[in-house]
Image (tube, rainbow, N blue to C red; front, side, top):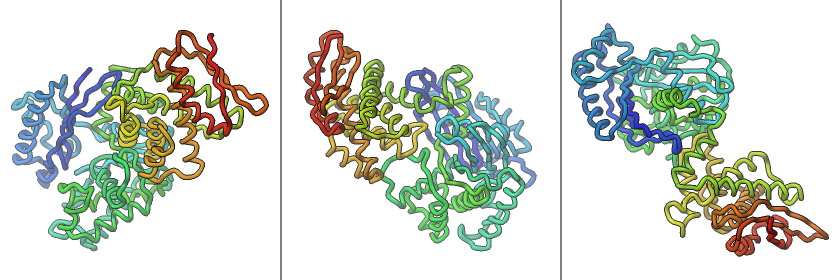
Length: 508
């Protein structure tokens, strides 16, 4: 187990994030605190950071260093981006911090800043092709990736703080002439990169400004589940947020749910950048990734030490493995449940009793693996705890809809409770709902076949003769509890077969 502290010294905010990494539970965030330092405002016209800015930086780093010590971090990484990178006196700033705080500060090059954002996106989401954008206080990084491989990267010399200073000095945040001039400038900047034009891929936003855009939209529509990672928005959704911000007064902005108070005066430039780039690339959608520069930096660091970690092809599998370990799921029992569930489903498909897609089969296996995860909290309320935890957890590689389906499968108890949970989002109707019920029922039944966690059942074999179905369950050992529970839960399989089911336990 390792604890890594990362201080992200941005142009707008300085943030301390403390991560804990363990091969069993993965990378987890223990602490995330920030201060709106706005370092870019301390850059003089000749791009020298003045003494006031250096003092703000020093005071913040000193405070964060003490917090990191309190959390017993193994290593502390203060990394600086645009504001320090653009400073002519950056070497002097680094030396000053080293002398007074004994802290080694690193400046991340533009290309590396873009890379870390790309790395985080492609290692925590299911997005194969996209254009990423990370708009900070003093710079904006964009990348183009295909098949999760980096194709192009560029850093623009503008951010939300510098755009505000350049176009809105002494003006209201929604001044029409300022907005028009700013958006013309932004479009001209993006026109410099021919590879951005008409990509028709997902535009992936990372960073605080993108997070606020997603949260504002979620709040406006009373979004039913928690988390913004992998949250998707259409062009109309972006326009809606843009309209809300434009028509609101400064005081009204402070009361908008989802908008951080320290971003009230800089959110409009951010949304303008997103809208302009969305239209430029003819994006298919806007997706927010909560994992960005900080996570990408730490993940890359860990992957160099543990080569098996953070494989792009194993995002969902690893995420489920880490979640299962976090909530004390016994891996051997989970694998046994998946094996039996897969076998029984395959036979039901062969009998044409059920018709499910490949995507549903994948979620079915994942739901079987995490079944009743919530018993870690309270075994008497396993189902509701399981649903709430999974539906509201940030699980890498899963869309929000898949996350809810996974939660419904892993928490399945009966149709009534399934309806109750499903009604929270109202995302499932008709056959999609029926299949979740049937698949959840299979999981509940096969869970009964290993209720003692001894893996005594070796295999299941479904037969049919003259319209009568029999399930032969082959076992070793003494599956006394399994025999009783199988009879109780066979009704879930009978619903799929639309027929009675005889169960015969047979010694292997």
